[in-house]
Length: 192
Image 1 (cartoon, helix red, strand yellow):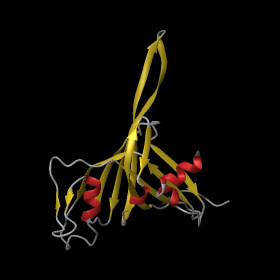
Image 2 (cartoon, one colour):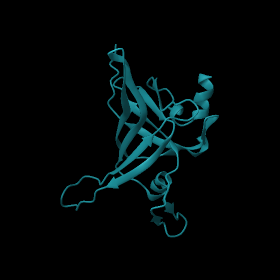
Image 3 (cartoon, rainbow, N blue to C red):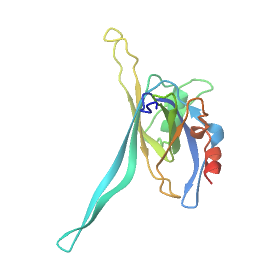
Image 4 (cartoon, one colour):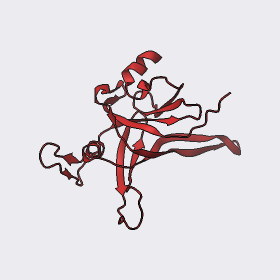
Protein backbone atom coordinates (compact mmCIF):
# COMPACT_ATOMS: atom_id res chain seq x y z
CA UNK A 1 0.00 0.00 0.00
CA UNK A 2 1.51 3.31 -1.01
CA UNK A 3 1.82 6.16 1.42
CA UNK A 4 -0.35 9.23 0.87
CA UNK A 5 1.29 11.94 2.94
CA UNK A 6 1.50 15.44 1.47
CA UNK A 7 4.82 16.57 0.03
CA UNK A 8 4.14 19.43 -2.37
CA UNK A 9 2.18 22.59 -3.17
CA UNK A 10 1.14 23.81 -6.62
CA UNK A 11 -1.64 25.02 -8.90
CA UNK A 12 -2.63 28.07 -6.84
CA UNK A 13 -5.31 30.09 -8.53
CA UNK A 14 -8.51 31.97 -7.84
CA UNK A 15 -11.94 32.64 -9.28
CA UNK A 16 -13.92 35.86 -8.79
CA UNK A 17 -16.96 35.42 -6.53
CA UNK A 18 -19.94 36.90 -8.36
CA UNK A 19 -22.64 36.12 -5.77
CA UNK A 20 -22.30 35.38 -2.06
CA UNK A 21 -25.67 35.81 -0.41
CA UNK A 22 -27.90 33.74 1.87
CA UNK A 23 -29.93 32.76 -1.18
CA UNK A 24 -27.06 31.61 -3.39
CA UNK A 25 -23.39 31.44 -4.28
CA UNK A 26 -21.65 31.60 -7.67
CA UNK A 27 -18.18 32.15 -9.09
CA UNK A 28 -17.16 33.06 -12.63
CA UNK A 29 -15.51 29.85 -13.89
CA UNK A 30 -14.52 31.58 -17.14
CA UNK A 31 -12.23 33.94 -15.23
CA UNK A 32 -10.08 31.42 -13.35
CA UNK A 33 -6.62 32.95 -12.83
CA UNK A 34 -3.62 30.69 -12.29
CA UNK A 35 -0.86 32.28 -10.22
CA UNK A 36 2.55 30.74 -11.05
CA UNK A 37 5.52 30.47 -8.73
CA UNK A 38 3.76 29.24 -5.58
CA UNK A 39 6.31 28.25 -2.90
CA UNK A 40 4.25 27.60 0.21
CA UNK A 41 0.76 27.84 1.63
CA UNK A 42 0.00 27.98 5.35
CA UNK A 43 -3.64 27.86 6.47
CA UNK A 44 -4.54 28.66 10.08
CA UNK A 45 -8.09 27.89 11.18
CA UNK A 46 -9.19 30.57 13.65
CA UNK A 47 -11.52 29.19 16.29
CA UNK A 48 -13.11 30.74 19.37
CA UNK A 49 -13.47 28.48 22.40
CA UNK A 50 -16.61 28.64 24.52
CA UNK A 51 -17.68 27.16 27.83
CA UNK A 52 -21.21 27.27 29.26
CA UNK A 53 -21.38 26.81 33.04
CA UNK A 54 -24.46 25.25 34.68
CA UNK A 55 -25.26 22.93 37.59
CA UNK A 56 -21.98 23.75 39.36
CA UNK A 57 -19.92 22.57 36.39
CA UNK A 58 -19.42 22.95 32.66
CA UNK A 59 -22.70 22.30 30.86
CA UNK A 60 -21.22 22.44 27.38
CA UNK A 61 -17.97 23.49 25.74
CA UNK A 62 -16.45 23.57 22.32
CA UNK A 63 -15.24 25.98 19.68
CA UNK A 64 -16.68 27.96 16.79
CA UNK A 65 -14.71 28.18 13.53
CA UNK A 66 -14.83 31.85 12.61
CA UNK A 67 -12.48 32.04 9.62
CA UNK A 68 -9.17 30.83 8.19
CA UNK A 69 -6.04 32.88 7.58
CA UNK A 70 -4.28 31.68 4.44
CA UNK A 71 -0.68 32.87 3.92
CA UNK A 72 0.65 32.07 0.45
CA UNK A 73 4.23 32.72 -0.70
CA UNK A 74 5.12 33.18 -4.37
CA UNK A 75 8.51 33.36 -6.08
CA UNK A 76 7.18 36.04 -8.42
CA UNK A 77 4.07 38.15 -8.86
CA UNK A 78 3.08 40.19 -11.90
CA UNK A 79 1.41 43.55 -11.29
CA UNK A 80 -1.77 42.67 -13.20
CA UNK A 81 -2.44 39.64 -10.96
CA UNK A 82 -1.42 41.46 -7.78
CA UNK A 83 -3.76 44.36 -8.54
CA UNK A 84 -6.68 42.02 -9.29
CA UNK A 85 -6.19 40.32 -5.90
CA UNK A 86 -5.64 43.48 -3.81
CA UNK A 87 -8.06 45.83 -5.54
CA UNK A 88 -5.34 48.26 -6.62
CA UNK A 89 -5.63 50.11 -9.95
CA UNK A 90 -3.48 48.83 -12.80
CA UNK A 91 -3.12 50.39 -16.24
CA UNK A 92 -2.32 47.34 -18.34
CA UNK A 93 -2.66 49.10 -21.68
CA UNK A 94 -0.27 52.06 -21.63
CA UNK A 95 1.90 52.84 -18.61
CA UNK A 96 1.83 49.41 -16.88
CA UNK A 97 1.66 51.22 -13.51
CA UNK A 98 -0.05 49.85 -10.40
CA UNK A 99 -1.46 52.58 -8.14
CA UNK A 100 -2.22 51.61 -4.53
CA UNK A 101 -4.14 53.76 -2.08
CA UNK A 102 -6.06 53.82 1.16
CA UNK A 103 -9.42 53.32 -0.54
CA UNK A 104 -8.47 50.12 -2.38
CA UNK A 105 -10.91 47.31 -1.64
CA UNK A 106 -9.86 43.75 -2.34
CA UNK A 107 -12.49 41.80 -4.28
CA UNK A 108 -14.00 38.60 -2.94
CA UNK A 109 -12.31 35.60 -4.55
CA UNK A 110 -12.32 31.82 -4.22
CA UNK A 111 -8.70 30.62 -3.84
CA UNK A 112 -7.86 27.06 -4.88
CA UNK A 113 -4.71 24.94 -4.92
CA UNK A 114 -3.36 21.42 -4.83
CA UNK A 115 -0.96 19.51 -2.60
CA UNK A 116 1.05 16.67 -4.13
CA UNK A 117 0.72 13.36 -2.31
CA UNK A 118 3.55 10.85 -1.92
CA UNK A 119 1.74 8.35 -4.17
CA UNK A 120 1.56 10.86 -7.08
CA UNK A 121 -2.07 11.85 -6.53
CA UNK A 122 -3.22 15.24 -5.32
CA UNK A 123 -5.24 16.66 -2.47
CA UNK A 124 -7.28 19.56 -3.83
CA UNK A 125 -8.40 22.55 -1.76
CA UNK A 126 -11.11 25.08 -2.40
CA UNK A 127 -11.89 28.14 -0.24
CA UNK A 128 -15.23 29.75 -1.06
CA UNK A 129 -15.00 33.38 0.08
CA UNK A 130 -11.74 35.23 0.72
CA UNK A 131 -10.21 38.66 0.52
CA UNK A 132 -6.55 39.58 0.41
CA UNK A 133 -5.85 41.53 3.60
CA UNK A 134 -2.31 42.47 2.63
CA UNK A 135 0.96 41.44 1.06
CA UNK A 136 4.64 41.95 1.70
CA UNK A 137 7.90 41.58 -0.13
CA UNK A 138 11.36 42.13 1.34
CA UNK A 139 14.10 43.55 -0.86
CA UNK A 140 17.74 42.65 -0.28
CA UNK A 141 20.79 43.36 -2.35
CA UNK A 142 21.99 40.63 -4.67
CA UNK A 143 25.25 40.40 -2.70
CA UNK A 144 23.38 39.32 0.46
CA UNK A 145 21.95 36.14 -1.09
CA UNK A 146 20.84 34.54 -4.33
CA UNK A 147 17.25 33.88 -3.22
CA UNK A 148 14.24 35.28 -5.05
CA UNK A 149 12.48 38.14 -3.28
CA UNK A 150 9.24 36.36 -2.55
CA UNK A 151 5.78 37.87 -2.26
CA UNK A 152 3.73 36.79 0.76
CA UNK A 153 -0.03 37.31 0.39
CA UNK A 154 -2.43 36.96 3.31
CA UNK A 155 -6.07 36.02 2.72
CA UNK A 156 -8.93 36.01 5.20
CA UNK A 157 -11.24 33.14 4.25
CA UNK A 158 -14.75 33.43 5.70
CA UNK A 159 -17.84 31.19 5.51
CA UNK A 160 -19.93 31.59 2.40
CA UNK A 161 -23.30 33.01 3.35
CA UNK A 162 -25.53 30.34 1.82
CA UNK A 163 -24.32 27.41 3.96
CA UNK A 164 -21.40 28.60 6.19
CA UNK A 165 -18.93 26.44 4.25
CA UNK A 166 -15.34 27.74 4.41
CA UNK A 167 -13.29 25.00 2.72
CA UNK A 168 -13.73 21.80 0.74
CA UNK A 169 -11.03 19.17 0.22
CA UNK A 170 -10.88 16.36 -2.31
CA UNK A 171 -8.35 13.61 -3.10
CA UNK A 172 -7.70 12.63 -6.72
CA UNK A 173 -5.53 9.80 -7.97
CA UNK A 174 -2.41 10.13 -10.09
CA UNK A 175 -3.33 11.17 -13.62
CA UNK A 176 -6.87 12.30 -12.72
CA UNK A 177 -8.14 15.74 -13.73
CA UNK A 178 -7.63 18.76 -11.47
CA UNK A 179 -10.72 20.49 -12.94
CA UNK A 180 -12.40 20.50 -9.51
CA UNK A 181 -10.26 23.48 -8.43
CA UNK A 182 -10.81 25.40 -11.66
CA UNK A 183 -14.48 24.83 -12.52
CA UNK A 184 -16.87 25.07 -9.58
CA UNK A 185 -19.95 24.63 -11.77
CA UNK A 186 -18.75 21.16 -12.86
CA UNK A 187 -17.99 20.14 -9.30
CA UNK A 188 -21.24 21.53 -7.86
CA UNK A 189 -23.35 19.66 -10.41
CA UNK A 190 -21.48 16.41 -9.68
CA UNK A 191 -22.28 16.65 -5.97
CA UNK A 192 -25.97 17.47 -6.49
